[in-house]
Length: 293
Image (cartoon, rainbow, N blue to C red; front, side, top):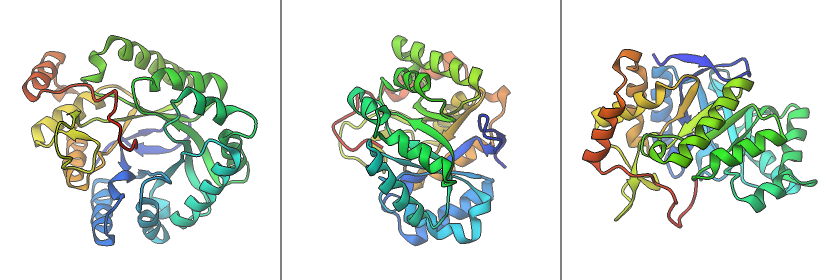
């Protein structure tokens, strides 16, 4: 079974792997149900999805009648205005077939102009706070992609006391001095304030150089041993939670890697460097001009 830890100051003991709902973007009902069986088998009790994730909310909603109590349920809105976010939240609740979510997040809030709009009067944050006051969401968070995400999250936390953040984190990214410094500053602030930290792009190998073969906008690691090392390296940082990769074919390997985690088996920095060189791993940002999840 996958170990659980406190998800920040929410009071919930979350599995250290969070099911990344983007994997259901264009899945069939049968594929979604097989994914659910895997989650229950490994003891995953936390799901993260978003309004923009294709069929994801709808397919997860099919699970909720029987399994709502089994999962800490999170979704996101990309809207930046109060009205847009309010509509998005109501639509998400309907698709998920629930009267509330456990965590409601501002999705990929890293662009400075969008950030200003979301925090301004009449901005999306007002809709999230209202949803929380009405009991439609228990906790609020902010997510981000790209090299700017850690610094922008620090700005967000200076403006509002969010309960969680979501940010990229993997070995190649942490070889970038500026990114590593920003990440460490964000991580330290979150630990100090009891803010939950979700880290994404665990299996990112490099940006695609050819045809996209997986339901990820980066080329992922695929071999079991490589996945284990990447996952264990990330899990060795205390208090982080790993949303699973966006391709259902990688889910069994990802879950098995998390379930096998033990501190004594964490690869060293030198071992990670050698793996990175062998596989040609590189930071995946700046992102290609495709959809951002």
